Image 1: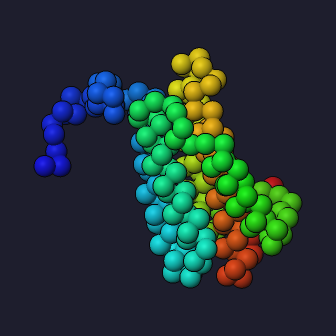
Image 2 (image 1 turned 90 degrees about the horizontal axis):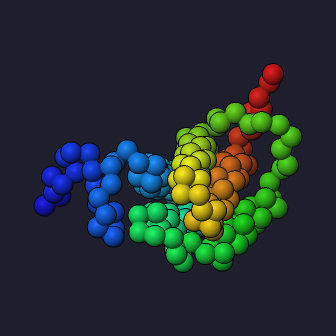
Length: 179
């Protein structure tokens, strides 16, 4: 049965069995992971339609890492996201950046649906990072989710580069903010 009725009064159970309010910062953070992962699925659909097979594989890897991140938030910090994961996403960024033009200004999210979807994912990743940092600050523990926070920070950079890559591959011009 999909419904348990245990959350009807605004509380839910963490993976360790602890009951917490659904309004806590921790729930906001891992709910945002879930939202980001769903939006990443939509980005993958658009990337698949563009036949960008390698990028789709990278996005699938990230979706799996987002499940790890959710587990880290729901259970306890641990080896869910590693330094190697951070280095891997940095490598993905560097590999894409080599073939892309350097930008000199702020870009308006636009282009085709795939580019816009990458920007939606990017902004959700930024919100996720803020949510995680609020919880970490409240716990007053800089060590909590160290690699996870770095990974999410790099993920938003990665998604910006994905939008640039989609633009280049499909002949879209990046539109810059005009003051």
